[in-house]
Image (cartoon, rainbow, N blue to C red; front, side):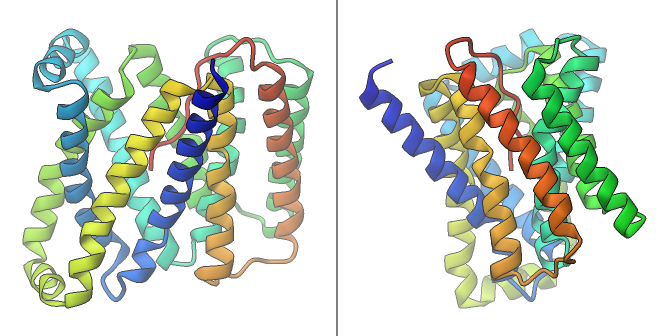
Length: 304
């Protein structure tokens, strides 16, 4: 791969990660409306943006052909719809958590996500683990054990991200669903419910539309959602898959920083040992990916 193309791909990927972290702050900026309100508004503007990207990149005939060829049985439709429910819940949590003191916990869920995916690859896909992957799982396991020992519990938001979200990627990979077409159809299916919610809360919608600062924030929300996804998909086509995967792990670090410094989410002192062990495990996964750049494998990373 030419160095200029590689450099451009790295830049596009890092920009997409930065935009994803900016999206995390929109619920904070758009207060006093709730995180659920922001989620519904985002689904509308994001669906519009994704359809514009889809029509430009592949066209409507290709989208219809995707539905006919990939969703040609009741079982496949059922699995796809379960995935849509999963990703909808993750989109909602991504908007709800920052303004409900769960920002750090959700960031931790995204830190644990790649570790859980490695574990799922071992037991679900029967992939063999090398020494670095095994050590990473042990470190992450120690971090989880420390959190359970210190707090006698683990945040449900962390568990929802790191345990439920991987199912979306595992089943979509098993079904061989293309990323852009699958996500566009997901948003299309979520859209009627988001619109119904907004119509049900028409007083909130009228207040938002009547407040001048939202005239800027709403277009920016749609633009950031669509552009971040577009840059992410484009960089994924330009970069070796392992390098793309490693760069995508920048996002949870930015989410953690945003939660602590911008959202002022409290963090218990004992939690830093938990985070340190899990981050150490993640670092080993990054080193493992770097060493395997010449033999890329499919990456499964969360959409936001």
